[in-house]
Length: 146
Image 1: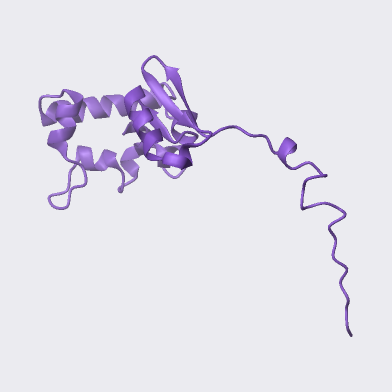
Image 2: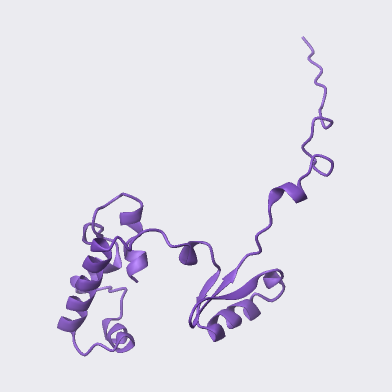
């Protein structure tokens, strides 16, 4: 949640998640009376938080800590992978991709954190001048009729 709330900060649009009215930070701190997007009760259960006051304090502290420690920078695990989570979750995502998972690999990023990645294939071996459809030999002579 924090990573997503810092998207506009990373993009340079705002200096603090509270300045972006469409983000999760504003909805957690000051939830709308109607049409809430975040289920606060479920969120508190998932985080092991007992009440609303604790949720507000914990989230504010987490945001401020990220700002102070400059931990809100881009992290490739969220931007260059197809799935991130425990091994069972990442395996399930890969299995659900069926044939589209060909060549994609699961790897452990940190203890208990797995990711599903695209294969890294450099362009040079694939698009050599001999095999490329874009080469100097592939020219079309234009006839100009005036």
